Length: 412
Image (cartoon, rainbow, N blue to C red; front, top):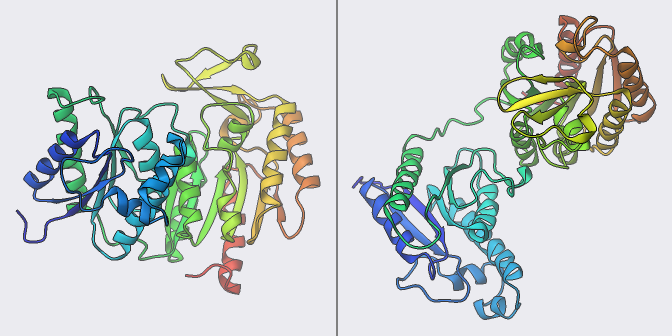
């Protein structure tokens, strides 16, 4: 074993998953790590003594385990245990007593584990073995931006060869992540930018070298649901010097019922945290759909563009673009920090140029009208007589950012 073994917080219901937790402990130790068991069970007693008992979890939220039992409802009990586990894990991390987290369970323990993962900072290894991994029951706003998950195949009740294989992989993954995770995070002020691929939105090609030349580090988030969720999470944690949110298709998708959503609170975290943000409506010409699913009835009369076997898209009509614009306006008008909305008057993705498959002059005009009449001071509206993929758009972005740097709004 290493002279300085990586300490893994293993979270599970030790009364019902003792065999699995003990197997994980042996796997972690075989990888050179050290397991610290946290029992988040409520009713039963485990056959081993965990480092952090269910009583310690309850005490972290100011209750006894019996008081949690007396709530009389399994959901209420697990919510309280989730709160206690989160507080305890946060305290252990801040005291430097753990190096990684590994949680196992079904839907109940996964619900709890998502809260724990969310409270631990970016770069801290966090792994969840779950019977509902990758399931549609997991809303995007619950998923931490760097959490790792694996499906607990065959793991509902008792150990077997499939279960051992999954648990062994999870143990190796989290110990390896601890051994190789980088401590060199945020050595430069970090800017978060949203985009789609370069075939649709190209501004990052122009802006990345310019931002780096100014002393920033740039992280570009792919707005296909989880990308926007990750940006929101980092903004909520106050880890971004500024946000350049130029691809708002996730906001529009959510308004029109698409599953390619980053949650109902997309485009809100930076404004709530007071982080300076420059916003533009890239991609709000279409709605994303699943290529492998039936086309929703409301879009059945549209021409469908199949991007790949996962994602397809349909053109938004003018009414739907107005709906999207109103949602954007409402969110930005609630921002508490400096906010500039840049409106490219000649189009907002590569496919809506004149002659392109999503070009709709009426739809763009109605979208612009809602933005013009809806945004209120102190939100600044800057209109640019250019397409979002033109260099003039990027120059306008840099003009706003440079002014913010000069007056101290954005720190370098």
